[in-house]
Image (spheres, rainbow, N blue to C red):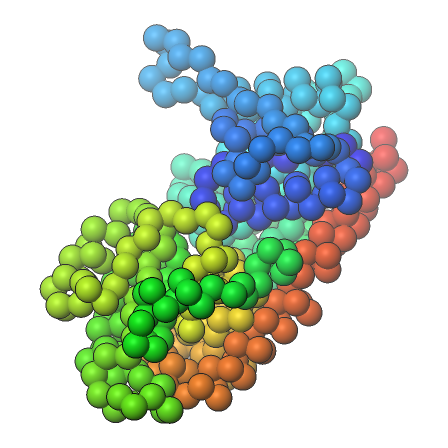
Amino acid sequence: MTIGITCYPTFGGSGVVATELGKALAARGHTVHFIAYALPLRLEHVAENVFFHEVRVNTYPLFEYPPYALALASKMIDVVKHEGLDLLHVHYAIPHATSAVLARQILDASGMGVPVVTTLHGTDITLVGKDPSFKPVVEHAIDTSDGVTAVSDWLRRETYASFDVSNEIEVIPNFIDTERFKRQPKDHFKQAIAPDGERLLVHVSNFRRVKRARDVVEVFARLHAEGAWPEDHPRHGQPGGVKLLMVGDGPDRAASELAVREAGLWSEARFLGKQEPVEEILSIADLFLMPSGSETFGLAALEAMACGVPVVSSDIGGLPELNVDGETGFLRPLGDVAGMTAASRQILSSPAIQARMAHAARQRAETEFELDRIVPQYEAHYRRVMDRREGSA
């Protein structure tokens, strides 16, 4: 197949999944054309069977805001015509699905229309899509797409509950390349950060308020004050025993840094900014903390699990579909800092529990979310969509 993929080319989960999907499809013999305003960050470079088409928006005095959605639709039309696409797969409803539907309608008039598959990722439904000014457009885009997928069953149910749509939504979860995301021998790296055998608590996010990074700092401060040394460590029962690594950047980073300073723990924490490859940091982690207020799936947690890191997370959204309470980590109610602290201490202070959950986390990533298990589901979805469109032609 020759497939066009449109996504936001950023660190966000939807862009990461779309890019990794395109690379995996190309590795399986398909030809993939990315259509976006910039090269997706995880694409790194254009490889065999992978092409990139930049969407450029010209500015005119008449327009107060650049008409990106129209420029995207025009570029999609151009790529379909000149590259012979079999299908357009767009990630995120606004504006990608609406642009793809418009492009398809224009192409239909010339007999060159291609099916449109829309993947819903989260905030396009839970935040942006619920804006009254966008809701009718989102509903139209979903119901007129030839195929619709969602990354979790929770998101599927949320979409039906929040929007007046009747199109079938298939759940195809996010996935992980377990050959890339696996625990690497980085003991020298860990020794440099935790020279006395401290446990490493890691958080990765875009530091938006909804990620609740300051809850991470509060859990860390409580752990440090009460002590999180392993049971077999000479200093077990004393304060300390834990270090914090904060990975990523965003609007809540400065407030989180201030909170660490005010707790008097600046020397015990490191803010590392955006990091690629993040698996090298996850390889030295003992626990991954995700107290998010909204998480449709939890791709960052899956990356940690694939690297053999137990997860303590909130129990909202799609996280219970990923993180199995008591097996791969613990789930706690949103905002339950005390509960998350106690759960974290249980893992960090017991080498046996930490090792058992680390193994279970890796096993779950391999058996349920491995790339080679999920990508064929997209291929099958594409074929069904193409067959239906050909049958109705």
